[in-house]
Length: 365
Ligand code: SAH
Ligand code: SF4
Image (cartoon, rainbow, N blue to C red; front, side, top):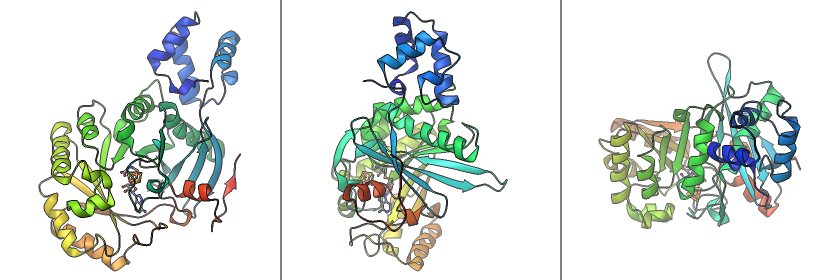
């Protein structure tokens, strides 16, 4: 059975035309879904009963069923969803209090079930690749949290979620078409209406995808997961580097900055004894010299792989100091939801292995 949130606006109009309905019903349906956050056709009371029943008989409205939820002490919520075929993905809601007393929420979204890249330090990378998510499965992660915030925290839809990061499970640029359809609907005023500049795509460095992204009109942000500044080490950490090595990746990043006029971000997760020496900080600064960029340094999340552990705080600070001394803009990112293993793929790993966890996991279904 197909799913309504998988449809573009043009496809919705086409479907309605086939049902003998006027064009303007498309806008009404989208208003119910993206602004009023309806969970069934039945509750769309302004629409004719024949249309609601006709749609309900043909397709599902949404695509995800929440299965489990964990909540961290910092308010981070991580939810595991079941898809229609029984496969599972996870997404995270991360609060950040503002100086004005409001809370801004960022949703970290998954784009694939598992991941084909296979980075050895990443929980998702260890799960193998199962399939791409559909546009609706990506969009529904956002709608779920928007609804949750409205129902539990009284937040108004649209205003509560201020940022989206495509940093959950999977490689977004390996599922480009679905990713882009989802982004267009999440951005569109007829859809969720969130500014493209408030969205960031994180990639392991798929060169053709970065090239394509640099031609898009929507100003979505880009972060490249670098983690190493020389090929041998990067190929070990991010195996797709064998296909798109640094001498191809970095020039494409420079072209992206030139053609979009936007700064690019690089993610650099620090692993003790692997990529955290001062010499490696200098090599990173050399690689990125003259590029309008920002480096996000992240002390590694705990993983089951003993080769990849987080350095002690002093090492992280020394690495950051060295980059700053060499005039590389960088920020030390505080891992969100550390006590709930909010790193990508970690809840699902636990769910798949059915191991006991330190934090209570709430069953939702
Ligand atoms: N596949 C994309 C997006 C999802 S991963 C990518 O790799 O960019 C999001 C980020 O989490 C990436 O920067 C990834 O390298 C990082 N990550 C994964 N496992 C991690 C861990 N154990 N510690 C720190 N960062 C990790
Ligand atoms: Fe995939 Fe990103 Fe994890 Fe690497 S870090 S395995 S690219 S999800």
